Image 1 (tube, rainbow, N blue to C red):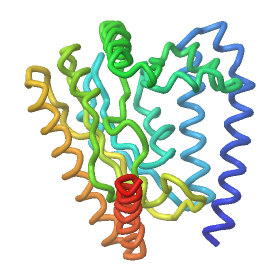
Image 2 (cartoon, rainbow, N blue to C red; image 1 turned 135 degrees about the vertical axis):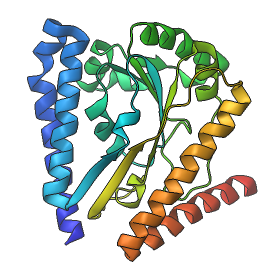
Image 3 (tube, rainbow, N blue to C red; image 1 turned 30 degrees about the vertical axis):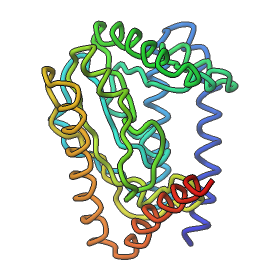
Image 4 (cartoon, rainbow, N blue to C red; image 1 turned 60 degrees about the vertical axis):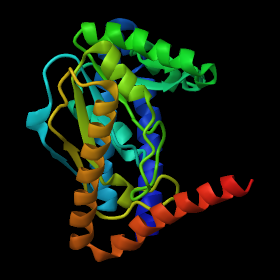
Length: 265
């Protein structure tokens, strides 16, 4: 049953995405980034709705009172594609840090450009970080939000943390507050794989980390805050559905195997 529901959702999800991208093209030219954000939030809300109706997977948002006004850095765990669209619901005027290659995707790239997002060339190493900081300053001054995934890529639920220094540099150089976001989405929607498991996936906005910490102190606090909250969410989800326990264990094992393979190579 999970396989059939997952297949139906995946088909509906991509049809919905393509139709909305086509219908929303005039808004890119008529309303600029505000038109893009309207369509992005529409895509996010309809995708969450489809997920609940077809797969019986509901998204629960917590800690909404912790979301600051104006410009801030949103630092979220990244376990699946689910949070990519689910986080859009409470983002009024955002800029996501993304790899430059996505600009060249048909239709989708137009929305990234029209929405004035932050594109980086990962091959440029340290200069790529300078690009992020320079663009983020303008975004934050305008009262917008900068979205960044501190580990840089999707990692399974339960995987050992591997935070990069980019988010700490962004915090230190811009003087903006940071809003940590913990989640357990990877238990229901894997980093890779087809299945969309039923249940309640939680996205929790934690109390902001205010400006003023030293870079290393901020990095330690962000990691400790997110990892502690995620472990709490994993335990809660598994208590409600013990069948999720192997998913959590497999996430850590998969990363360990990949690390061992790299060391042997």
